[in-house]
Image (cartoon, rainbow, N blue to C red; front, side):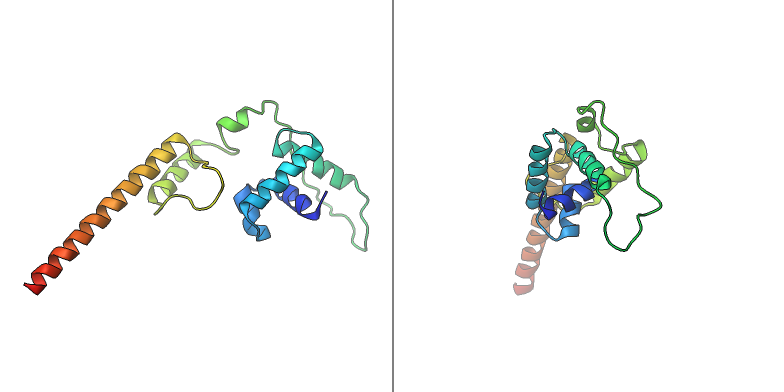
Length: 156
């Protein structure tokens, strides 16, 4: 495995998504996804969580070299997902409080999410983004018309 694939899988094992990994490694989200897909093929597993778990297990099994002693606290590996489809229904750590905070952030966000090769918004998120874009466009048009009307009054 390349060093880039190892870095990406270490961060996946820590629970980061592709966008967060891209920011940390100063690479594009597309590059992160490509490295993770390559790792999936090499491990022969269908999910990134499973690939990260296998990598973490293999990485911990290697003997530590150098002058430093191993850490006293070793984080637990990722648990296997008994039903892979369940991760598609709800994101990790989902609860009512998270949903309310997320909805509020989406409503107050100025524009649509930037970057990414796929649209990861839910249906209600897409509708909300369209409504937000329509309202912002309407406000912009009205403001422009008022400015033009004021300019004509000032010139008359």
